[in-house]
Image 1 (cartoon, rainbow, N blue to C red):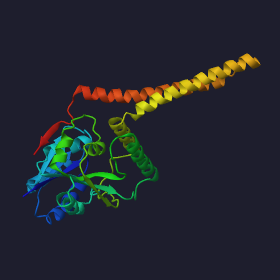
Image 2: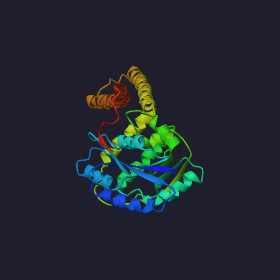
Image 3: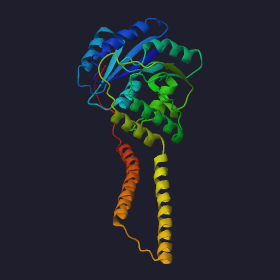
Image 4: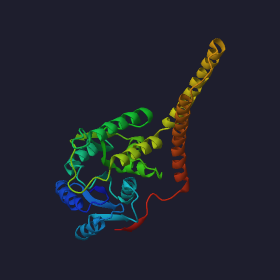
Length: 308
């Protein structure tokens, strides 16, 4: 019998975890043709998430867990879960039940009978999400699809049902700065997208605020595109041309009309503007250098404190 590993990254999911386990158990009992295992990854939670994992493992031999020494982020948790998974198929799910377990049979059918290597999910709406956040999210996907050589679907979730060959390809990418949505697209493989309506968390609070999502989107752009570097070079070249034209205009103006150059307020504004522009471009270069520096240090993606 084939085996399926359910990888579940968790951060402060003490309340949601029992509800997730109960809901998922109902679904997998209707799939007797597959053997299942749970891989819960505790990403440095500050509540009793680790204790709940251990209690589930004591009463169910299918349950395994990995406990980090501190919070390393969801990307590290997903990577660790995939490394520990032993199944022929691997599923990544969130513990808050925003990823519907009821879709598992449909995802299995897509992978085993329709010839796909992966069945992925995407939200068709953003009900309950702030308008500004939704607007920036859609903008991010549009920008990424234009500047990066990867296919990113608007509303894509990390909820995926993957064959072992795809999982092995993802695990072969051992980079420290991980952006899984980009990695999923970069490795390729045939993917079927399954739409579903947005769901609210069953318990707890979201760990993602606007600033953290914005930071995550910037990391994605830096990780999978060099377009920002090109933009910085183009902006620099453009303003060099503008400055040269301005000098020529001022020279001709003074030569013909004898009009002296005056106005220190406008000069101060221009100096401030160009200084800010230089810092902006230097910041873009700095982000790439920082990522390279982190990769060169060769630090582990995560550190395990305890596992079963």
